[in-house]
Length: 370
Image 1: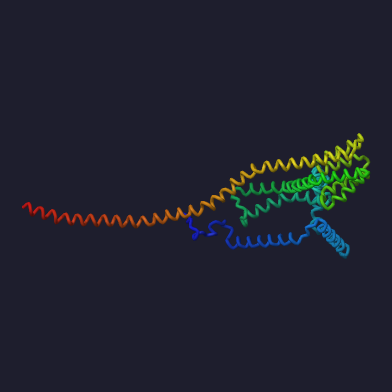
Image 2: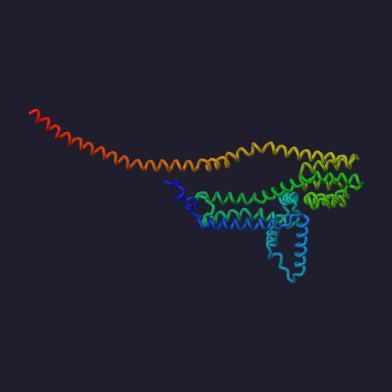
């Protein structure tokens, strides 16, 4: 039976067999160093978006200058990007239907380069083999993952499936974050479009001006408006540019803006009034969503409080009392055992003394009777 005393506590008894106390201390020390490094980096990082953008431009210019001055460039096939490009090209993955869907998915995440497309397709191809190989090597080697011997094959298959769906999950997470940022900046962009429309600018010039104004605050929305303004200048149909904006964003609010712009261009309705109404509706919708989240907060906090906060609170409050009660009962049992033994010894000696005294008394009584 494991002792409940604090002085009998051994850390090694609570650790897995493959993890020693020294390894745990080293891992915690490494984690503390990493957290301290990230805190220092975050403190030294420029807080102004303009400063961060300016530093990125300087780094990019320096990189381009070093690449231009480099006398002998490495061949593309010897780099990681070149190897991925060769594999994707040999397997003809860029011409498949999956590649078209993946290109639209990457466009919604803000990745429009051909290099991002190659990396995504290569990750979809290589990640299942990498994850499955890691699980198999760990099952027969380090045993870092606690997988029973009978389920090694199933664990490897599950890891391969995880590796197959991991790139899609990552890209969809980026899409969700980007859509949220554009949703927050859309009312401000519509207000700027209203100002530009009332100032007499055309739709193309208004989109370009709004794109420049939003570059530092809402970079994602600024990029989309800039692309739309560029497409409006060279595409044969203006409707195609707005449909491309819908496809790149895939947001209900942007679809509402696009439909308003198309109706304005078709029926000649006032553009500024329509955009002002849309901006007010988007702000009201954002306020309603915030109120809904605030109303759901008590119900969402119930389960974490029951599972995590209340058990910890009970352990902190009742743990010392429970340990004291257990120690008291254990000491009482150990003290009652010698007392019972001494009582039984005293009863035996008194019985023998009483029998000895009864013997002479009976002898005297017999003599008197004679």
